[in-house]
Length: 77
Length: 562
Image 1 (spheres, rainbow over the protein chains, first blue to last red):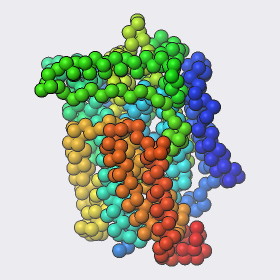
Image 2 (image 1 turned 45 degrees about the vertical axis):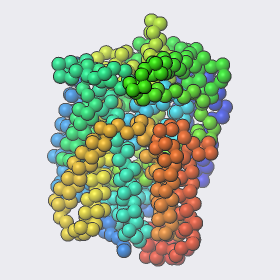
Image 3 (image 1 turned 180 degrees about the vertical axis):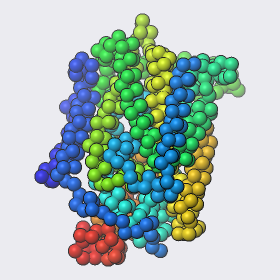
Image 4 (image 1 turned 180 degrees about the horizontal axis):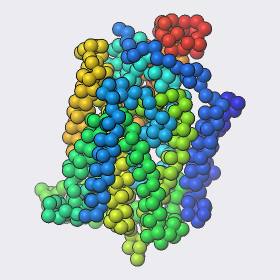
């Protein structure tokens, strides 16, 4: 499932290019919003949904059990 | 007068919030710089969003939409929705876990440890601070300009104004120097007394304010224009190229022709004037040319900057737990949409809107960044004008506060704390030093802002580009254990050299349409820095087994491959 979610995010990034609405100023969604803007608003909504899926299925291992082992940033020469 | 009173009331409210949050201050450095790592989901999402949304969101989005068209949303906002959340999820959570585990307060502490190099901090320090300064300037300049525009006529007995035209100050307006000074002072006060907790509280409040007011303003202005449908129809008729990403030879381009006529008039006057009395030669307006596919695609690199912003790093470290990130990862694209869509629509409508046969924005108007302020001042009530200005200032201040605090934190922890007194500083001393640095940085930023360098948007793009080009460094540090100290240096130096070179090539930001082989310069810089990091890492000795074990506990053997 993890790879499916990441795959879908990559597909969304490809679909973001939106070749099909590039030259369209005639279509207005609801007679108000130009299609090029409406499409990208949908991309934002899709991004939220896919990142919600990533939070559920791709959550990094071990980060929920982190314990402090030092009190300040150390450094090496 | 009403807008001014509302702005004053809003700033007072913000100060009150700062005072209340300072009551929770525990007096320790960990509390001042990291809120004792106790920020929950809601405050985290609000402070991350408030910090990433600068004057760009409200002033820049509407201004760019006015100048270029609705394509600006796809280039800047929807890419940001995908990439910012990716940075929070893939980089932020990991860095938070390292920060909590090993006690980091700043990015430089992490990089010094991860790459076993004290001097890397010295190389990164001027670069990170140098790139944040323009970002700070965006905010201070945006605030000064906005207040000046909205308060025109408010205090005629105090401010006489100066000159006329786009660079003049209207009579009675709070002048730029004073408006920007007040904003700096307000931010300084709540950052000074309450540290990062104060910025988180203020950011949450301010984020709610600018989202709500953006929506209300959108609704009021669309009503004034005769409804959203009519406003959009006017764009289709007068400037249809604004609603797409191409320009056709037969496009009416009413606004561009208006600019051309204004330019011809100015040129004629300039040529007619005696040579000794001539001012600067008027600039010919750029002909709209649309957005190329490659430019649109390569804009995706700019939001990678979020992965390297030192102030974002500091906010990540304030999280109570890894789970606190969940809401931020999911909600961020939606919040961006809520803020940007209304602003982009308002900017597009401004190109073509007429009321009673008169253009809402004069056809000769040549300052896109002032479009939103002008529409609000001319089309809404004084009260809403004041409230929206408060919203714009909220967007600006919610970034400024984190940046001021972050630079103070870097100076305190990475320079003074690291070299001068090492670990001998008490908590009280660290807080005091942090506060002193915040004051100094606010003062320097204010003075620089008075010179008004470049345009707000141009400055931002170059600043973001620099941070984005360093993204391979942070990503590789988290995911590629073979990344070496030399590879890290190569990445940073490549970024610095290319940034300076390309910035100079663009006329130091003057050429706003500067591209490299049709691509955004950031794409070239990020590609080159990633390549330098990988090649040099593979050619040099792998990191020590102790470092690999520290940051990659699941690794099977020391520095073994990917």
